[in-house]
Amino acid sequence: MNTKHLLIIGCLTMPTHWACADDANPAANTVPAQATQAETISGKVAETMSTAGYTYVLVDTGSKKVWAAAVEFPIKVGDSVSFVATDPMENYHSKSLNRDFDQVYFTGGIAVGTESGSPALPKLPPGHPALPGKTASTLPPGHPSITGEVVPKKVELTGIKKADGGKTVQEIFADHSKLVGKPVSVRGKVVKYNAMILGKNWLHIQDGSGTVENRDNDLTVTTSTPAKLGDTVLVTGSVSLNKDFGANYKYAVILDDAKVVVE
Image (cartoon, rainbow, N blue to C red):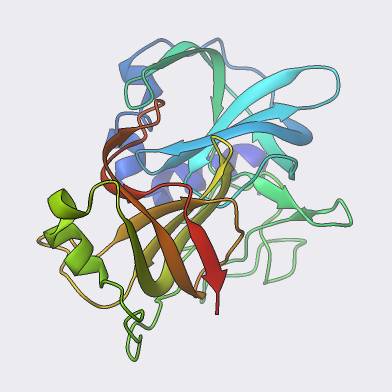
């Protein structure tokens, strides 16, 4: 199976929103450059940001810097990455970021390097047939992402004890107008984590209180303390309202620059 066939299969199996969402459909905003022969670009992440379900990375190859974007994934400045570069979008405007890019490579997947420097390629989803010349466990370099390839681990929220003298996530949202500028403590589990975006670590924590429908079950926290998905954390910080960090990072309720203790 040649690269062309792999790319066609990848496009057919990509999630529907890849072709419909604002940032996922660059053709809606600009015209792609003339098709070029695929090449693998590797380097260090010099800048990164996530928005509208997608992650952008500025890759420093040592001789040039190029922007690439893929479905949202965890990444931080300094990580080694590689991706297959085809058909870059020239003069691309991201509505969600309100930012113009001279050039962006929209790719089905970006491989994040391990400490040894070899790319940590995404695993094949369960039941996916083996690919010619490859093991059944990994995609070949440059293979487009496959629907269902990454399934977020569900974080168990039962048994989380309320912080002594503190609030639940739902209570912070309910009393936000009274709590603005005041320090509060809340205990929860990390359900989403992004490191070093805009100079901060970003945690989304939940404790089982609130509901998705009322949008009071998930609290955003920024901190200098690292954490990981599933960690139980005790967070202490001041409540801020309508916080705008720029780059489309706007939050009605947030604990900014909070103290985080991983328990």
